[in-house]
Length: 519
Image (cartoon, rainbow, N blue to C red; front, side, top):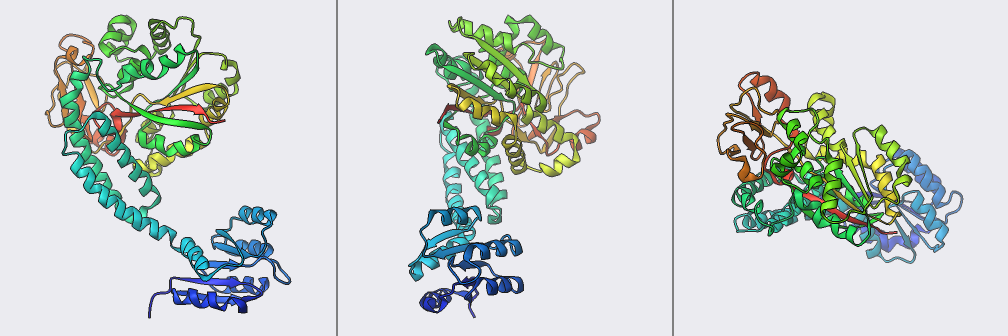
């Protein structure tokens, strides 16, 4: 006996006239139960399990909408297709408000009914099969692609493809391909590391390079300011590209969006990449130009981004836009964000508005300290969903909605991303070494080349000398650094956590969304 494709309840006072349709569905493998009125339909739903209900509107006694509401009270998740002669818009509105799966207008032929049933009952299965076959084909394409000599823009496009599949498998978890995708991302990261080792140094010394952190404002902001346009630069600390793509559908309701990219400087961490964004200078340059910044980095101060407002002001002046009015605002806590949102009207005449948002980075750090957050955010998919949930209810989203109607062009980006680290590696270091988990600077640092980029001459990589014989370690792939003392304690603390500062697609390839209000 062939497997039943689904049990369907059909409610129509003229059910006898629909015999050809019923026979056609039964031939296709569906099991049909028929009733001629709403009360019998409710009784059947109470007594039996169905996968789908087909419902007429005009029946004696209880009409279709009343029947639909009672069915939904009994079985809220039972999908209903309404099939009726009425073309009245009010009925369509009512049906939509009651979340009918489809609305069909009689006369309908058997194939139309079959197609509607198939779409409702088998859509997820079909999409999962399509996703499976689509990814398996793309898997081969990506494997071949990373063996070629590809450019940084092609790496960005390849990373986009991988992110697309991450989001697809967030929805279609039953494909069983999530682990294969994770492993392919790791494989791509290993090839990306070789690419960065081959090219990064040269990019630092030429203008013919992909956009780096130092190029963000000159490339995306300055041209708009020179045309007297108002610009709002929003830097969401540690926002990964996959996380941005998770929230983009909501933002695109209010903006026309063009997504570009820039490449985080190494170490891909806030003291280097974000200071470079706001100063427009490489780390060796801003540490030389601003002694207080150098001193803070040498002394491992609690905050290494205290001078961004000054950096930004000076950079805008260097670009000969001395008349531009600038407002810089850093937001650490939701309460501060709500206060800013309530004051946004005060800044509508400012030519350049710069906002720093720290939620995503704080979430990563707090996760390492909280067993509850570890369970809520177990992996990259959980992190994406946490960011999406926060964003949909955040002051930032409300602020963006206001900005969409204000004439501002919004540049939404990050300073760097993050990666979920898995392999603890012991490094040699002295007491004055910086505390980063994915990068370190100090004296007498040592680590195997396979685990870290070892930078013995900081000036070659546009990094500051922060004391005698300063060198840097920048972690590769999913490595995190440990000291021999208290090894097991910190291995347990950091394994599986989200960190930044190293070399990976997730940390270095950063989205730049140029957004214009669609209203």
